[in-house]
Each structure stands twice: as structure tokens, then as C-alpha cells.
Length: 131
Image 1: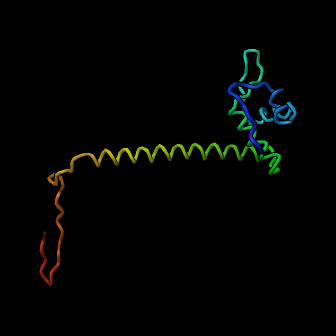
Image 2 (image 1 turned 30 degrees about the vertical axis):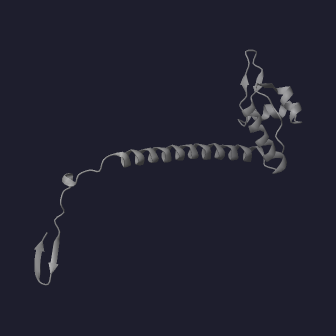
Image 3 (image 1 turned 90 degrees about the vertical axis):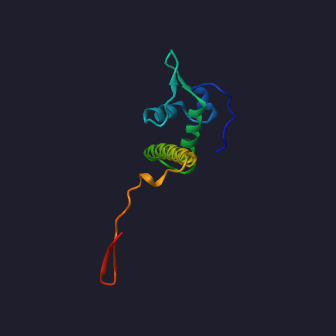
């Protein structure tokens, strides 16, 4: 599905329904099912942001092009959100590890005086020597 040209701002339900050739009740159903979460004006009018419209395009792609039902769409959206969170967590971890490695590489090398010598038993022939 082609992305619609939009400007910054919020759109009322009638404008969104017309832009995407869907009935306003479909948008209300998507909201009831938790698939969309438009903000509300002071007069309790639904206002759809550009992010809401991107999510709607994804939902409509799943429903129209792939034939996924509402329950399936909900599961896919939940998995997508989890994957985005895991990706964010992984990026934070990689960034932390990179910073930690760089800071340790910039520190002067430690002297070996802090190391505890290891005493090992070495068997040579039948004589036991301690090192």
C-alpha cells in the first residue's frame, strides 16, 4: 500500500476515513480492540497523528493485502512492539559495552603487583616440585 502524503498535525476521524477509504466505524473498532490509540481533543474528538496513520497503514496492509484478522493483527503488533523494545535494549547494551571497552583501553595498564601468584604442583619423573 502506498504511503499517503501528510503534513505535521492531527487529523479527525472523518478525514482519516476518507484518506484511507474506510468507514469511520472501522477506525472506532480498531480503537476498541486496542490496535489504534488516537489522542483526544478537549471536546473528546479523536485526533490521529502521523504516527497513528503509519500504524493504520500497517494495520490496513495486514488486513487488506495479507488477509489477517483483528486477533492476528493484535498479536503481530504486540510482537512488533516487543521486537522494537528488544532492539532498543540490545542497542543500549552494545553502546554500554563499547563505552566500557573504550574507557578501559584508555586506562594505563595495571601493574602485576596486584596479582596473586598461582602455586602449581608439577610432577617431573617421580619428584614432586612446587612452583
